[in-house]
Length: 193
Length: 226
Image (cartoon, rainbow over all chains, first blue to last red; front, top):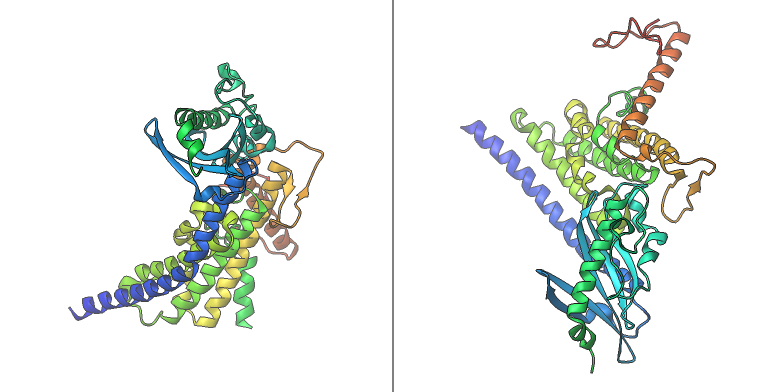
């Protein structure tokens, strides 16, 4: 009995000390980690949006479409609608989820995409992060473009030997565009006077 | 000097990767580039030194029956500290290493040194052992990661910001930065280490006995057979 008590006491004390230490470290790094995550998202939003004079990340419009919630960050320039950025993802990647930020401009064309997270094969699927591939998604008309990879009869040239990754990116972009087109008016008015 | 002896042995004679063949999970998974290897090595070294120091300090207070849970709690604490600090101050590296930072908890090198060394030796020697093993682990990962990055991607990156070295003139073998490349590179490096060890021993007039569980009689590739 006495020995059992000693075992319990030792483990309890060690765990409590470890817990206290971790609580301290957590409170020191918490803000910093939040900052890092916010900046990461902010720079992606800025990367895909046309020039604007408001704070797109503070001017969001949440819509529901196709069973998912979409958060559009709306950019304005001199009060007029300049564009919108939206985070989208596809689970059809070769190595899991691919998440990206899509920018749409006021001419109803795509502005740019930025890959936020992917676990594709290095050297093959991971080339979706390359400018050559991302450039394919710039300046295309939203409604009239054929959003599919060339292999499926669309107009996005897939990366050789990485059709699955290319298809997943295209699919994610198309889902976001559908959500945008279905809620175009509400998004364009967000933050307007 | 006992301190230096314990420190040096981890780097060469008892190198965790090439001699003890411990911690193979991160060794194969994160060594896709030199930068990732260095990051993993530094993180593991920090955990190893801290956990060795703490475990050595409290080694006489811990009852034998609960020593493993206590070691794991100490190790997990330092791993979590590394995880938090890295995600705050080196987010890119943290994103690359991802899951393998929390998995340092179950890295055999760290629990192995706690059980085999720190729980039986005084604090200064345990710290030396931690530093030595950590350096050896980092060195092993870096050699593996460097080889794989050069062959598989044609580049060599030490740290973001420092311009990376591009090695042109050949088409990189993507295989080398995929999972099979890890096994191939590790196997070749282990064979090379065995060869070097056998050669140096031969020069000194000693022979190294072949590994007990291997039948080397018909193979003449390494020097064990002859």
